[in-house]
Image 1 (tube, rainbow, N blue to C red):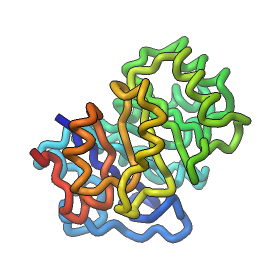
Image 2 (tube, rainbow, N blue to C red):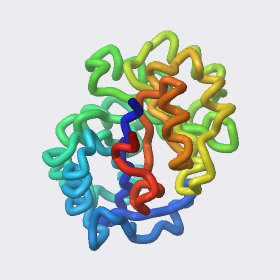
Image 3 (cartoon, helix red, strand yellow):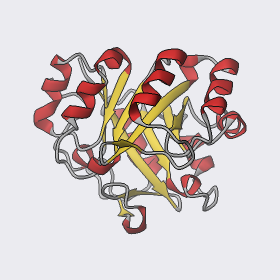
Image 4 (cartoon, rainbow, N blue to C red):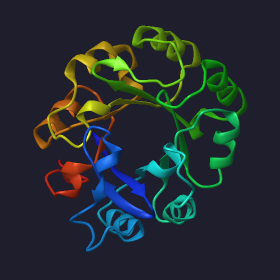
Length: 231
């Protein structure tokens, strides 16, 4: 059965909503799970709806605009185990975050180098680490590394992480459907994949039948179109 992992983006201590990674135009989140964009209220409601964990992207830290959200995230982690993305760039950043969340995401968007990724995996258990393969316009999205998708697959084969987020940033918030071509190209990693980006209600059973174990859902979940349990 496919596990739905709720997605929540934080900015200036409130939950926000946006499309396709356009962080300049994010607005306070309107969710069926709360009467306000208060992330603690939303997290508590999601727990009551039987969510097992929650994916949080701290947009302020990702953009290096301050740590407005970090202690609120630590509090949320006492309600629901947090899978946290704050734009890890190196081992030092990763180590700092271990006190604030259950699992830490190391994303290709912000990672400094493959060497830093290897340092993290050499020092810490795989259970605490999730690699996020960020894709934009069907290409590996990275600010600091000169790699393409095929190059990064070689890295994944070598490191052999427990979990890999496959995130099509272009589809985030669009409810336009997941990137089928991208998922097919990562078939060898299917048992490890957490899929994200544009997933619709009609695709939940399809993904479950394909053997995908987890999916990140934001917009469709907060609008009530996809439930934590759809079966």
